[in-house]
Structure formats: structure tokens, C-alpha cells
Image 1 (cartoon, rainbow, N blue to C red):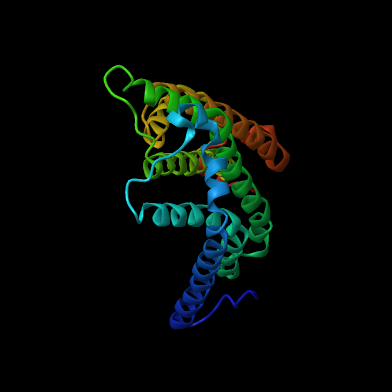
Image 2: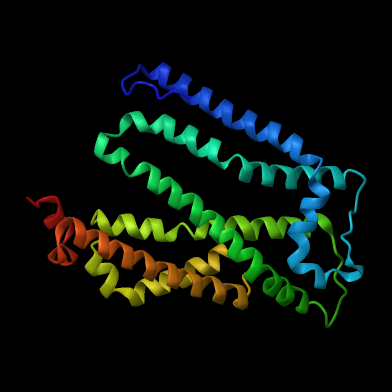
Length: 258
């Protein structure tokens, strides 16, 4: 899909936005219809980490239309994942004309990092979080009730976990740009780490769907590691661009640099 000119009348911009949104919606919808026929196998994949907690080894659907709605929910979830390159490209193609040549050089690595971190967050959640989180949740009711393996409930929680961790793992990218653009000076991010860690703890509590201490602790540990890695990468980039002294620049000093 071609890149449009930077200067266009407002109505043309709105038309361009509508056209690109239509491409995204149609792509996701068509992909979801195709994926729908593979949803039984995909549901098996999604529930594999929590298989040991399924009484009888199977999920339960509580209504006649339940299976249909569940399959489409799972189909759309995987359709969004499959269509990620199309979605990213259409967003890029709409905003690229507004960027100068220097800014455009950052677009591809930024988008690549966004996609990588999102999928990394989902993979981390799938292999590390889901089993532990479901184990803790189910344990809360074992002393007074039996847990019904309700399919829509289980799959909705799994999808929320996956998306939540995918979004939360965008943190390093945010920290990286805050630091190298000196929107929040590197010196502040490094010296005020105690406050940052408290903020990450709050974020972990907000993002985790089950609000369990186990899941929150795992999320918190992952975010601290990602924060430190992001600061390390930002430090290297700042030194390479402006020298070691730039690590102590304030926002005003960065704006007034020669």
C-alpha cells in the first residue's frame, strides 16, 4: 500500500484514515473466519498450560450458543495476532508522511521492537504465568467449592493474561525513548529507581487480571528486569550519540545542546 503525501486536505486525511481502518478490519475479519475452523486445535493449545487444573480434562459450555461465541472469540484473538504485520503497516503508512527523514529511520526498529516485546510478553505469560496463576486461583475455592471448567470463563482469563502481559512488556520501549529524548533524563531514571520500582509494583497490580500476589510478583520481577535492560540500552545509545557527559544532562541542556 503506497505512502500518501504529507500535505493533504483534512477530508482527504479522514478518507485515508477510513480506508486504512477498513483494510485492517476486513483483514482481521476474513482471517477470523478462516481461523474459526481451526479453533478446536487452537483452544487445545491455549489451555495446555492449565490442563492439570481441568477436572475430567475437558471444558464445559453452558449454553447452546456458547460454543459458537467462544470459537469466534478465540478466532478473533488469533486473527489479531496473525494480522499484526498488516495492522502495523497500515498505522505506519498513515503516520509516516508526517515524519522527517531522521525520524523515519527510527520507525522500523521501533515497530520491530514493539512486535518482539508484545510476543515475548505473551510467550512469557504462556510458559511461566498461566499455570502458576490458575493454580493459585483454583486453590482459593478448593476448601469450600468445586470449580466448574466453564469454557468462556477460562478462555477469557487466558486471553486477558496474554494481552495484558503483551502490553506490559512494551515498558522497555517507553523507558528507552523517555531516556534518549531526555523527556525524563537518564540521570533521574537511574537515581530515582526506588520510586520507579514502586510504580512498577503498582503497574503489576493493575495489569494482572487475577490480582493474585503470585502473578503480581512474577510480573513485577519481569518488569524490573526489562526496565534495567532498557536503561542499559538507552545508556549505550546516549553515550554513542552525545558522549558520556550526556548521561547527566537535564531536559533543558538536551534542548540547548550545540
